Amino acid sequence: MGRGHCGQDIWWHGKLRGCGYRITASREAILEAFMRSADRHLSAEDIYISVHNANPGIGLTTVYRTLEILVDMGMVFKLDFGDGRARYELATAAGQANHHHHLVCTRCKRIIDYTDFIDDEVELLKRTEKGLSEKYKFDITNHLIQFYGVCDTCKTAK
Amino acid sequence: MGRGHCGQDIWWHGKLRGCGYRITASREAILEAFMRSADRHLSAEDIYISVHNANPGIGLTTVYRTLEILVDMGMVFKLDFGDGRARYELATAAGQANHHHHLVCTRCKRIIDYTDFIDDEVELLKRTEKGLSEKYKFDITNHLIQFYGVCDTCKTAK
DNA sequence: CTGTAAATGATAATCATTACCATTGTAAGG
DNA sequence: CCTTACAATGGTAATGATTATCATTTACAG
Ligand SMILES: [Mn+2]
Ligand SMILES: [Mn+2]
Ligand SMILES: [Zn+2]
Ligand SMILES: [Zn+2]
Image (tube, rainbow over all chains, first blue to last red; front, side, top):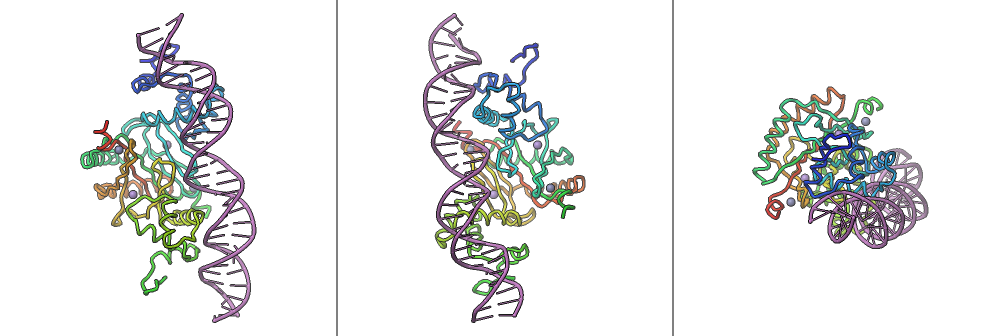
C-alpha cells in the first residue's frame, strides 16, 4: 500500500499497481485534480488546466492517456452530455456514499446530480443487475442512469 | 395528417408539421432508413449510406441536420457507446412495445438491447420520475439506462 | 546503482461534426 | 394552377476533440 510524504496511505496506489501501472507524478496530479473538484463534470481540458497550476510540465496527451486507464480500471466514469466533449467524474459504485445519477436539461444542458433515490431504486437495480448478468452471462460492473427533460428555468423562460 | 401515395396515413408528417418543419424527400428517406433497420444503432454515416441506395442526392450534411431536429423533437434518441461516433435509434417511450435499455460490454463494445425486467423498471422509473420532476421542477421526457460489464465471450476469451 | 520497459510531451494526423453560402424545393396564398 | 418567401439542401471548407508517432525521460525490479 502506498504512503504519502506524511505517512498516510494513498488509496489509489494499490489499484494502479494491481493493474500493472506505475505511480507517477502526472497520475497523482490528475487524481488530485479530480478530488479537488469532486462535484464537477470535468473535461480533459478542464483537468489539463487544473493540473497546470501545480505542475506545468504535464501535457494534454498524458491527461488523455491517464483518463483512459482510469476509466478502464473503473476508477473514473466517462460521461457524454452531448456538448461535444467527454466529461469525467470519480466513479462511485451503487451503495457508496456519493453515488448519484443525472438529470439533464435538453434545452440549456444543465446537469443535476441527484442522490434522492427512492429506497426501492437501489434494490431494484440490484435485482435487475442480477437478472441481466444471469441471463446474458455479463459481469456487470457499473450503470449509467440519466433522465432528460426541461429544467425549471428553461420552462419559465418560455 | 399526411397520406402516402397509396392513401395510408404517414405518422410522422403531423409531428414535423406541428413543429413547423416541412415534409421533404430527404426526411422521408431518413425516417425510412430508420424503420428499415429498427434493430440497429445507426451512425450518421450508416444512415447516409443506407439512404444513398434509393436517393443518391442526399448529402451527409442533411443527414446530420435531420438527425438533429428528429432528436430535438424526441422522435429519435441519440446514444453514445464510446466508439467515437454518435448512434441513433427510433425513440420509444417507456411502456411502448419495443422500449428497451442497453447492456454494454466495455471490452468488445457489443451492445445488447434488453427488454427483460422492463416492467419492474418502468414501474419504479415512473415513481422516480415523479419524485424528481416535483423536487427539481423538471419536465422529464425521456431516460437513458445502460449497464456496463464484460460479456460472456470476452470473459471466457480472458 | 543499473538496465529496461513504461511513461511522457511536443507535434502531426485523424476524423466526426459544423459552418458557410449559393442554389433548390416546399407550401401558403392568390 | 402560378407566385413568392423563405426553409431546406449539398458541396466544400473549417473546427476541434481525440489519437498516433517518436525521441526522450522516468519508475522501479533486481
Ligand atoms: Mn455527476
Ligand atoms: Mn437500442
Ligand atoms: Zn435548462
Ligand atoms: Zn465483450
